[in-house]
Amino acid sequence: MTSSTSTHNTERHSAPHHSGKATVSLPSDTQILITRHFDAPRALLWRAWTTPELVKKWWAGQRGQVTSAEIDLRVGGSYRYVLVANEGFEVGFHGEFSEIVDGEKIVKTEIFEGAPDGVAVNTDTFADAGGGTQLSVLVDCPDQQTRDMIVASGMEDGMQESYDALETVAGGLAAS
Amino acid sequence: MARAATTTDAFNAVAEPRRRQILDVLVRGERPVGDLVVALGVAQPVVSKHLKVLRDVGLVQVRDDGRQRVYRVDARPLREIHEWLAGYSDLWNERLDLLDEVLAELAAAESGTPAVRPPDVGSQHPEEQS
Figure 1 (cartoon, chains in turn green, red):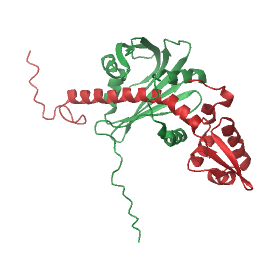
Figure 2: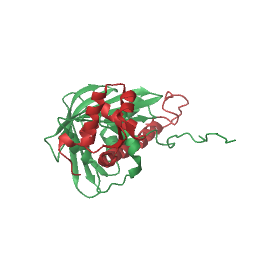
Figure 3: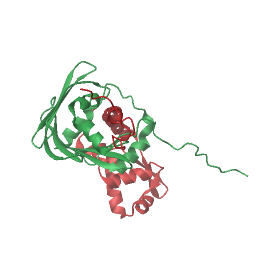
Figure 4: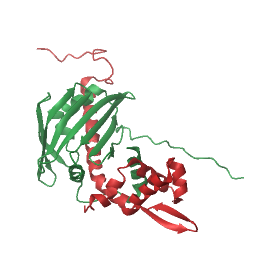
């Protein structure tokens, strides 16, 4: 007799100190959607997202250092982030806030200063979810070319990602 | 990365939900069109129209198997999308992982206890002694 015991001995949990992995999808030709769950209260996430000294600590990722973060968080107010990439070049982004719902939602333009013609509109939303907070960043671009440029801006020199995640990609695209 | 004209572009092809559904079915193995009609629950002409787009951008290949045509995924254009999106996705993961750390610092600074606790529970901070 064949024993048909399925050995699901390990459920996949995220590493203890990361509450999740961001999902990046392309809901339409002109949009990018980033979603991520945080094991932190909404008020805290909001603060880390909107306070210059705190933005400086995370916005560059591993790509460099944020050298300047200015945020005038009010409708009509502007913001500007500058980072110096590890390779030494400087990259600036700026924009203006068009809608702010305290603790819940920010709508702002985003202009990459290297290609200032493409003005994206970012909608950042913060929602209570599972004892933490669900963040979503929807990047709305005026056209596909701008969308593609923004995505390409995240590309580093190499393609460090492995090739074996194709089914995941297909699934992610379908889920978007 | 070099990109094809938008009319023959894998990126556009997968922007359409039905076409993503078709790929989702085919990624599990090759199927005749009739199976796709059943799986998607839409009329064959609709499926055929989407299959044509997918074939045009190279995401789907077809072969004749007796009397029926069998479709399968060709993942190469998807790989291109994956690679293209990977850098951007990595950037956001790096950012948001760092944001996790910032949040942990904030929570720790706010109270020695989990952030949901009111701050004055057991607070004995003799910090302000001006």
